[in-house]
Length: 184
Image (cartoon, rainbow, N blue to C red; front, top):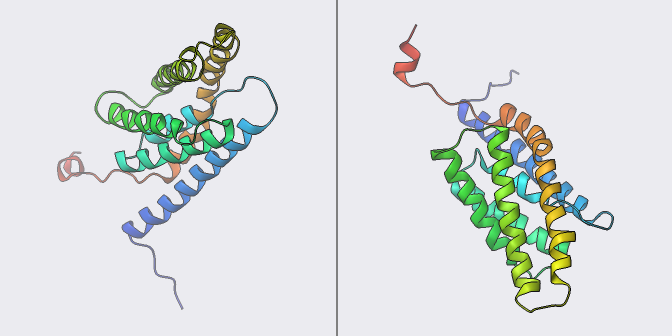
């Protein structure tokens, strides 16, 4: 009895299942890391979403942003769905930017992580503290939001180095066109 070799489509499906299983594992590890300890922690989901969405389409990116946003809301005790909407926007924007404008490198990942984390923390500060004119809201921004932004930017190359081998190994290779195959 011999085992039939897999076709290209079967390999792509098999690798997609493995790739997404590893992504889901990283997402749950990020949710666990957010809940460990006290004090200011980075938002692990933002660089993870940026690194994953570099290679995916708009629909998987929107789904990923929704799931990561809901997990972050649950982990941080925020209003359920608040982060989900912003993460969906971030993920779809990342997919479109990398598809049409940016190269896939660590500098662009750090830049997008910095922009998204800053926007998220500013929205969070405005909607949770400044809008209600709480006393000491400046303290929250300077002692919690800004360190969170810096920590998230610092961990983004590490997340990139974790996700890049997964993409390199399990993302399907581009099929060559006839013109590319005929070149000597």
